[in-house]
Image (cartoon, rainbow, N blue to C red):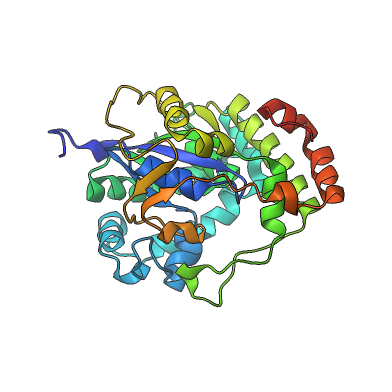
Length: 330
């Protein structure tokens, strides 16, 4: 039930930042089932692929016929077939690319170019309208966005008010989801998986273990810089802890996020299982379409499936971060 105040006046956004194949879809949906929270999937993909290609929503309906997203689009922009949606796709290329992280961090310190600052402000305004519409349509106060990319999250989370900029219409906290990079590399190197939201002929990418390890390490460096320099509130969670001890792990995260006082917040989470209803999350992996009571089992096939030579390579490339995150250097 909605409170007498409008919860969507300034919704809180929990932004899951991290590398692909780290369990972000699972974490997003588990958090989205907390009372008063809603998960939206990888919202970064809405203007660049979900809406243009009419991909399926997590509820199973094509994006164009999903009642939830139809209401959100009408509320935010008067419909999705509009110039503001196309503008968001354009702005991502000039305001939220990975190569812009140093420039975005300069903005957070009061420097940087005025033109980039204007583009970031416009980017925040566009996504702010979506976040506000999601909050209004769902009745939620907290939105879980699993877009993952640090640059996108940085651009959305920057406080631009120091130089007279307009404050964003949401409050963003970045949660860094990490997984053992050897498991990540193994998952990326396996054969491509179908993306049912885009049709059986569309597949998720696959990349080699060396490239995966290098990109994983680079992304963790970016996240560390963002956490240390941007002023965006942050937290961290490990995939392995989430599946091994879901209730205490999520309880700690909710406490860190200032949401640890609700006794019923995790009623959907058991010791080794989670009960999930269909949601309206976008993009992500095929697990988005599973619902009901799901067993939580760690995906550790890499321990016997990743060849020793490749394991040593990933370990060497990511060693400083393995130590930092408490992973053994096997």
